[in-house]
Image (cartoon, rainbow, N blue to C red; front, side):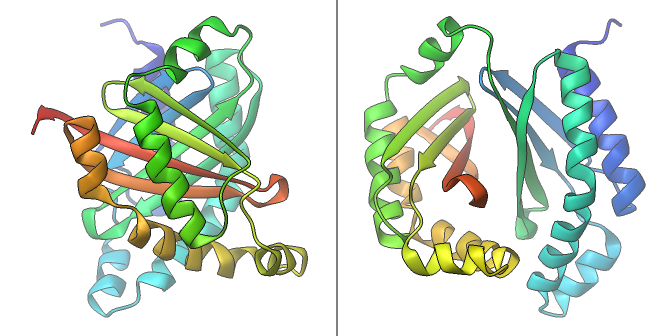
Length: 230
């Protein structure tokens, strides 16, 4: 069977994760829509991580994964760039440890704007953006710019720009990015009104992921949808 770009990315990235984490994801679902590529990981939890979770140490698992991802991000960027012939700006990630899921996603500069315009003008965009602005204001401050893209029927990526308050900016300047990331992951996810978003979209949300570009004052939200109608 001929390999597609999606299956090649899933296979290559899965092997990289397996070689470094000791266990690869059970499956990887790749979604491509300019300017993003997302890789949704399922059944991704190593035996030692399971033990740490059972002992009540989720932060230890996240800290270890963050350390490994710092090493792997350049390799993942190289894999995506080689397979797509696109210039990858950055790679982001997040985990839902209790569900054994995760997301790895890349942002790149598309060569044309036509596809981007189509993905950014999905029917529920304004309503989704209102909820993203609402919870972002509670967590830090309203974004100066907000772009939301529906890559396909099950994947929405939103980018928020200029959202950090002064204390966060100071923590970034003084080298506390890791502590800030761990705190913000928990805070932002607790503030998102999932039932409201599900009503807006008419679909169940299987997972919500977040990550940030601290050097450029930007934050990302990825919604993974279940395409079965509620």
